[in-house]
Every structure is written in C-alpha cells, then in structure tokens.
Image (cartoon, rainbow, N blue to C red; front, side, top):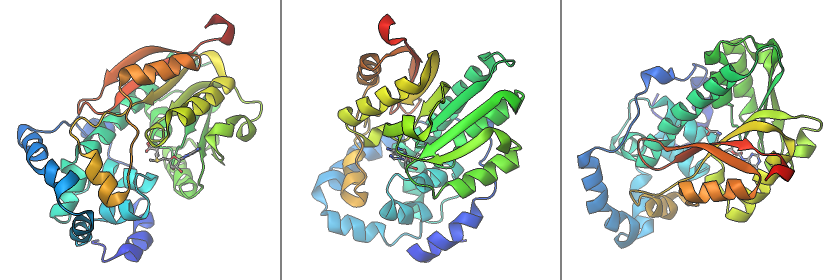
Length: 306
Ligand SMILES: C[S@@+](CC[C@H](N)C(=O)[O-])C[C@H]1O[C@@H](n2cnc3c(N)ncnc32)[C@H](O)[C@@H]1O
C-alpha cells in the first residue's frame, strides 16, 4: 500500500511487517554494477557538494517511499533496516534509488546474510548438551539471532538468547517473530544501554555475541567502552561478530546532508585494532561483496592471556 505521508507510514507499516523476511537463500549477494558505479562518480559531486541541501531534501520529500519517510524520522533505525531487508518492489524512482541502487542498502543486506550464516555455524559448533547463551546488542526485533537459531535446527532447550536494545519499540514485533519461529522460550527482550550491559544482564555469561548495525554510529571511545563491557560478560573463548564501514562509493555525504545519517568509518584494520585493545582476537575478517562492511568474528581472550 503506497504511503501518502509520514503519519500514514507509521500507522500502516507495523501490521505490514508480520510476514517473516524473505529467506536468506532467496536474496543473492549484491554489489554495484558498472553503470551504477559510473552514476556514483558522475552524480556524487552534485549530490555531495554542489546542489544545496535544502533543494535535495525538497526533491527527496516528493517520494512516497516508506524507506525515505522513515529515514527522515529515524535515520538508520531498525525500521529502515526492515525496509532494506524486505526489498519490496520500489514504488517510485526515488524509492528505487534508496532501496536498490544505494550501495549502503546493498551492503546491509549482504551483511545480514553473512552475519546470520556465521551465527548458524557458531551455534552448530556448540556442544548441544551444554547451555548456549547468545546476546544481540542493539538488536531491534532480533532478526539475525532469531533467524540463526531457527535455521541451525539445533534443539532449543539449551539455548538462551538475550536481545538488548536501548529502545523497546521493536520488542512486540520481535516476540511475534519468536512465536512464528517456535523459539519463544529461548528468547528474552531486554531494554538497556549496551554500555551498561552488566546491569542489564546480571550473572549472565555469553558464548556468542552479535554487535551489528550500531558501531557505525559510535565514535572510537564509545566503541571501546561497549567492547569492554561485552568482554566483561563473555566467557573466554566465546565469539563476537561485528563489523566496520568504509564509504567506498562516497555516498555518505549525501546521506548526511539529506537525512543527517552520519557513519563513523572503520576499515578491517581499524576494527581489528579496537577489538585487540579490548581483549578480543580476530579469527575471521571478510568484506561483504559491496566492499563496504568488513565483517569480523573475534574470540574473547582471557584478560591475563592478552
Ligand atoms: C540500525 S538498528 C540495528 C538493528 C539490527 N541490529 C540490525 O542490524 O538490523 C540500531 C539499534 O541499536 C539500538 N541502540 C543504539 N544505541 C544503543 C545502546 N547504547 N545500547 C543498546 N542499543 C542501542 C537502537 O535503538 C536501534 O534499535
């Protein structure tokens, strides 16, 4: 149903989201085509510098795109991610630009596929007769962890997943996902600041943690604080999956000018350095096919073994 304005978008989209996301196997990896890359090179100077931001905003606001409307309200929030992951047929030209032609959108979908695949492997490697505790940080509705538990097919009686977010507005939706997947006994949603995770999860020791869709909005100091807090609640030898961001096609300035969406850039080396400083050893690091997110798996190292 095409939205006619911001309030319509907000009221129609939640019931619209009941269906599960398309299966990961049905979403191939994406990277910009030659023509798309050429278009970035030719148009970026206008979008990033030459055209006044007020003109760009006025033009973008002519779209009926739910993703664009959401990006004005809560840039980079979990609802925007939801539109990206669903990848519905675009409703107008600007919707197509935002949903399909923007490399950041492609990279977010690639990231979901890679992170979920890695989580599935880690879950399968864990001995099924031992309790498995998982943590999703800045989880939104918790698609990554919930999909991985479901796809792994492991018995869930020993699995506990804590999905923590500063805001609780995705939890009702997340609980519906858990019910649909038949894993609700394993899932707990908790409101809390990840930097004070010990207070949110007293007494919990985490085997697998996922920190996705949040570090790109934090400066180094905040990332270090967050990683240290996670280290404190992880078992030595536990795994953390996270990522960096490189604005490979220089689309960031346009997003900042129009939506105030600002990303901190970190390449594979920088995110590895931050992880090493905070007690993690990187075991796997691979850029997703759009070349924007280096996706990292790291092991939590015992403090005195660093
Ligand atoms: C872009 S969404 C990502 C959702 C999901 N992880 C994904 O990748 O699809 C970022 C989420 O991080 C949450 N968040 C931001 N800062 C946080 C913090 N300090 N502690 C916990 N959650 C936080 C936001 O409320 C938001 O739901």
